[in-house]
Image (cartoon, rainbow, N blue to C red; front, side, top):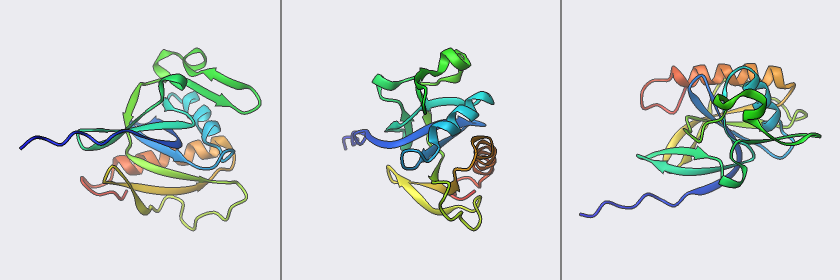
Length: 165
């Protein structure tokens, strides 16, 4: 039997960052705080994979993300413009691809906050893989970065094979 080829890549309006070794896919409408969160996380030593658009690929049955070539290593900073992350944070601040381990939906600051922000919602399926999914209100970027670091720790401690932290 001939092995099936991997599914074709697809694109999401999202950002991907590696936090404590976990790939967090940040989703949300424009202005929800994705790039501000990335700036705060990069300042703490975490690593940028993609800002604004993530190309999702299958790698050994797991969803991985990378930046489209045209925007790789770049970050859009509101009221400043597009900047090269490596120039601001060093070459180690950018990685070409990373496994997607969890999804975080960023809600606008005026939205009603979820009752328990660190309790996962129903999982998100990417490429047939169930990923833990969380919802956070944007708030200030430092507070958001703190909460994203907590989620990364929860995800890294989840039982093997479980989408839930």
